[in-house]
Image 1: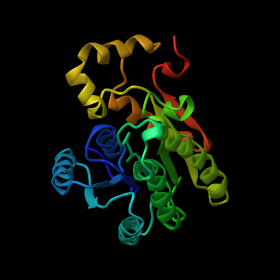
Image 2: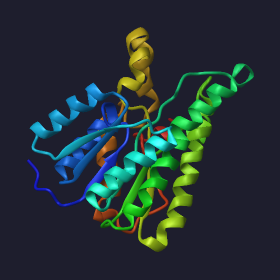
Image 3: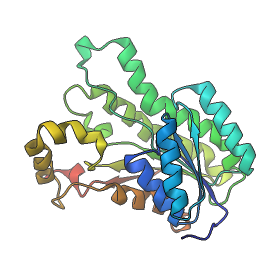
Length: 254
């Protein structure tokens, strides 16, 4: 059980995978936890789990790609607590696969919205409350695909994550005068439901991915949660505009 440190963290996409692991880690570190998602039942379940661990948590159901929903929810949260100390823009995803020749404009826009618009909407709405926080910071999520442009059919996912890398640095420049830090993590291959389909249908392919990672194993959600917790902590108070690779050396290849 943790003693509440008076700090408030908003974590998007927090009802499973890496997002929920971040919530657990932030709870351990003493934050009041504000979880976001689009599944009310999952949200209630995760809040109950966190509460049973002795953490203070609540859930807000809103779509991070919807500007009006984001603005309304973040205002409600910010006004309730009077400030925000950490915002983790974890929500995002592949959104499907499509080669450019067959790609519809609708698909293009949906993937960009899921990864880049969401980061912009949530960050923009949070800034007035981050200005009132302590060691205030934002942690975004980019990907190796932001550098290597992604695998077959994931080109627009890679493009959106490259945008997250750039907006992280742009936000850091913009918010430095206010003492607000902005960083990102870039997870490698992490064993989460994100990869559930290939794990179930082609387990040998899934297992082989570890061969391309220097440390010889897939990442776990806790590995990413620890990195996010560090970037949000006072230990990282002189770190901003950085993207931390959390991939066991995967980005360099072997």
